[in-house]
Length: 114
Length: 114
View 1: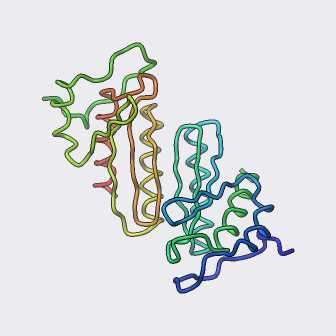
View 2: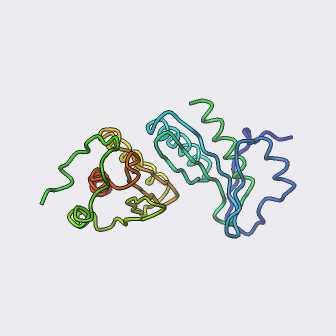
View 3: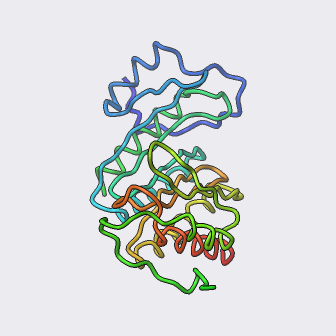
């Protein structure tokens, strides 16, 4: 099975279907701590990281932002004291794309390296 | 009338009342673009800044974070592509403190200098 950590995002400008249930089953085990949230005809991936303070949350947000810029795919980051919540979804298809699973895996890796 | 921009936060460890309606009327005109959101027995200040891209939102978050560290008072920052939402409230009193109005004014100033 392909390792999401080795993959890169491909541009998604819409016109494609969201990721299939079959693909979700394939990729989800690589990001076990992420939740798939279904909301108002859309879905997104979410993980909340508990951290030691505000500054650490902001440093992590910065590092995720750098990878997001490189990959051309951007999350929602909610920075609070001792907590960073990360959400990934694909605006162009109003749902989940394989890119989101790739970025969730890369996000976990960034935290491990922090 | 005192200029919030010249003020600094004072430590708040609880045991004091939230800001009074009278004080809110006094300070709110200095932060006209902020909303006071009342939610579940608490209140917070919120402003959403429309920005040109994700990187700009993250730069602004970083600058707000630096001022927050100096003042010892921290917001919730929601970073998205082209948008930064900032929320200020005081955890120790589960509501609004004068510190939050000071920080909202300083946040506006940071954006003006961006």
